Amino acid sequence: MSSSHTAVPITVAHGDGIGPAIMDAVLFLLKQAGAALDIDTIEVGREVYESGHSTGIKPEAWDSLRRTGVLLKAPITTPQGKGYKSLNVTIRKTLGMFANVRPCPTYAPFIPTAHPGMDVVIVRENEEDTYGGIEHRQTPEVTQCLKLISRPGCERICRYAFEYARHHERKTVSCFVKDNIMKITDGLFHEVFDQVAAGFPDINSEVHIVDIGSARLANEPTQFDVICLPNLYGDIVSDIAAEIAGSVGLAGSANIGDEVSMFEAIHGSAPDIAGKGVANPSGLLHGALMMLDHIGQGDVAQTLHNAWLRTIEEGVVTADIRDGGTERKYVGTDAFAHAVANRLGQSPETLKPVVYASSVEETTTKGATRLARPVKRLEGVDIFLDWDEGDRDPNELGKRLNAIADSTLPLTMITNRGTKVFPDGLPETFCTDHWRCRFTGTGSDALTNRAVIDLLTRIEDAGIDFIKMEHLYSFDGERGYSRGQGE
Image (cartoon, rainbow, N blue to C red; front, side, top):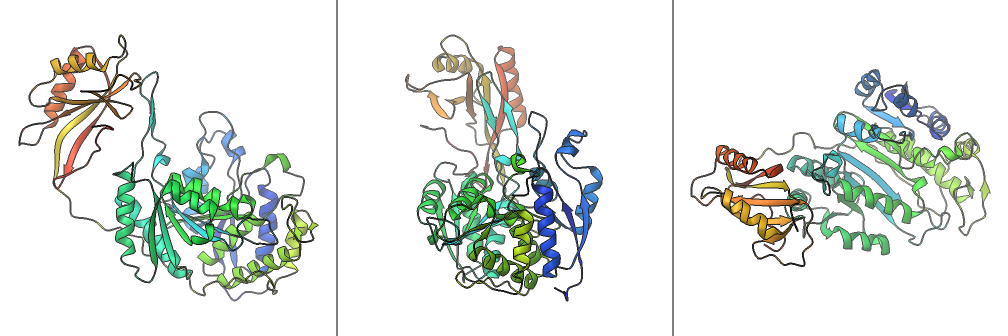
């Protein structure tokens, strides 16, 4: 098909395993459908890792990504063993791809699912949360992973979710958080979600605790439309949604940034079937359709998407699509691509035809709201210890620390794995070698770092191993730290 569009520069990575085969099939379909693309090819993945680039991408490839602003990427293989970082995470975070978008529709009765009519889109924050990968082994028995949530990060993803809903004529955005436990981090996400929702009165909004929200999604997904989540929950929920929709192998994914965006399948490189010509290109194709919509070629995406739906309706599928109540004709990767190409210009007869917006999706995520700086006051310090003496009696530790503390920073609490064990702890509480010791100022004046340093010096002189500390601040008089469990 011919195209009236001006060619748009994109970067393409063929990946590993089944990646090259499904990318060739998708590029064939894009050409047949009339997509106007100026393709620059880069190499990423296993061979790049093993050639000495621990990130899985060569330095010169970054130039292509920054020049085109669009990456269509096939699955890659990360070598097993320590020292190799996830390429996806590296690209997303380095280039500011803050939003991961995964549409999860069903195709019943042509692809088996227990939930006909499901049509959920997962919008996941892509840069923050535990995916900062900031982890430490602090004692022989205890490790930690930092969960970082920022107000600008929350605002960008929440605003994107509502603007996506408006652009795609969706009616409701649901937020999943766990702020009944993580009241400060997830509480911030909830707070910002509500603030952003107020600016979209034409779209319904609701908030669920992530565990019950996920259970409801798995049981009755048709009650959800667009779901907006922090990073970790979004990663888990998006795979659940894709699987209950019919198959993870069919799902595409968009990673949206202000300057660069990446489009891909959500499945892996499947090296066990590489080279056999049986891989399903549909997941990567759906990523490519999102790419076409992103670059303003929604008409091409609509034509190609409807041809794919017609192909599925007529029972032409790859070997991974099993069962179902329709007659099947199983074909390989290339034959499936040609079957879709032969149906360009046709629309499905049973499934609902797709309609893409004629305009490029516009968002206003740049420049998150800068709040006035609050009054920040140091009120105390949590000092974490590696302490493994005797029977690990918290009362003994409390006695030693009380002898060290002074009236400026008295000891007020000791917790073990977050649960208060001193004063007035219970003997049934299991204790490890990792202790959080809270010292809180009692005077009307704000504490100084000098008081904290002096306390740390006395702890060091007493031969007690401190491994970390966290300042306890209030902001405009509001406490900026959590209480201990049982405090």
